[in-house]
Length: 186
Image (cartoon, rainbow, N blue to C red; front, side):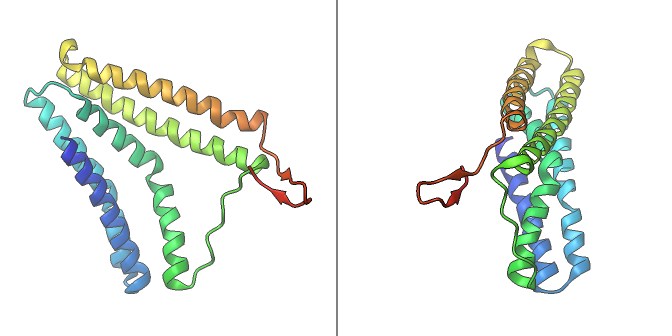
């Protein structure tokens, strides 16, 4: 099961890089777009294989939980990861503008941190729906305990991420002024 998750992650990036290579290096925009549209199908394949494996009587394992987390994160962060890669490909191979550096201080940094948390929340919600679906489908508490534990741990991680991400709204980072009066960021 872990090998399948790793294979899906590799396949995700192969399709992304192939799609961007077709778009920017080979100037095959439609082929590139088609390859990028296949990335959600990888998640669907992982979900189907995981569900079939559980339906065949397998005891839910950490790997099944990781599959749900992977799918949630892929959906929640996938578009922004592809966009991040797209900007860099466009710059390197198509004369696009330089990628903007992340702001590391001020209100814009706080906003970016909040948006990152909301993507994490979306990932968590999708992953938990999938985990609950697996638990409901198996319907034997002793065989799905690890999936409940996965949700608990992920919920704690989400809570910690919330505290960190929203702390920048209350206490934003500021530019530091060094002894030589130059400005630097944390």
